[in-house]
Image 1 (cartoon, rainbow, N blue to C red):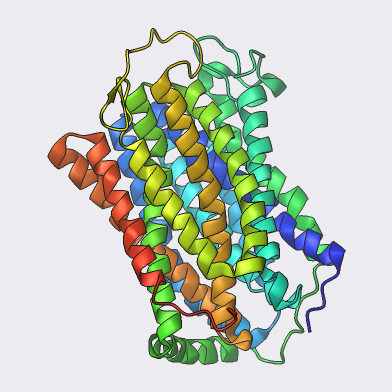
Image 2: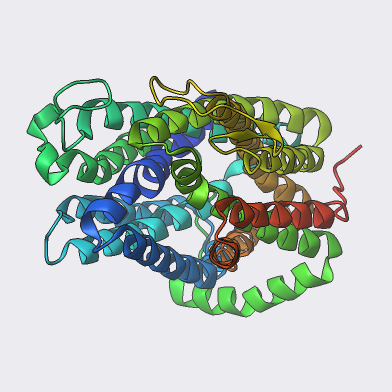
Length: 452
């Protein structure tokens, strides 16, 4: 029976709050754009280098996550693994501060820190996810998962407001998004505020991950040596993969998860670039758009968790994919002078924030996309728990991480190739919709044994 009380559940939920600033600040809205524009030789080369680092980290995760999950299932306890992988997350984030513009080692510091921190946070997440069935009954897993994603989005929102409003300043004006001088003497000329997003994410994580270690019960450590666990874990990994293939539901779900997660990777990677190119948005507009997405993502994750408990995770995933497809189609129909492909709009004068109709349509559709992304990911981990044997959850969450990473380069590559071939950003982004559609078709063939 689940052994987690309210304090344990709240402490587990705080892991998403603790980890989210790394994804929000480092990988999306602050450090990554800073790296491409100020550290790399050129923005195009910076985007390529960032993609290579992402791919390298993703390959390591794909190779090791299932193995580590299999080992952890043999040794029992998950907290030691979470603690071990918290170390590279923190060290990688700290290293980012040394990626100064014009530094001989700036590129190396940035890419190494990012890749190492990515490995740490992704591996720690595998073991944190596996704690869920020990905290709440099966019929409340959807609410727990959705609450985790929602609280994570809220943490990302607050960290983004703090970073843009107090630390990261425009190097030309020396002022932050709130019109203030950067705190702690962070020098706008050296982009110290942008670089500080790494240490800030590390400090945030260290503070808010502590309740998990203090108040969340762990399963007992089993009397198995690490060497024996490695041997048994590796031996059972192949059996798990074969079992997943033999179980039609699990196999189809893992493939569906792989396909639509590829689409999400591309959506997050190119969304800001698309807005900047098609609508001419600057850092202020993109940052404000990011704040909107985290707000709608928070609300969507809370609502999605409750819908998950009422109707099951599979309908929630399907609904989220439909929203992503329809709103994504709407986004590619918008440019500075056109809405929904055929409605011509007089170009704006650029005065004011989000004053033109295309910008406002883009905001609404983007907000709905953000609201759907949280439930999609939260319900996905709930559905996996419904489909696999409870005693092998960590191992299957390793395969789940593998399915979400092993082909994560495909959708971004497809977007790049189509964009280059057509010279159209809209055509390139439209490729993402094919990944969401394929994932929905595959999901339709999955049967949830817990569904009524």
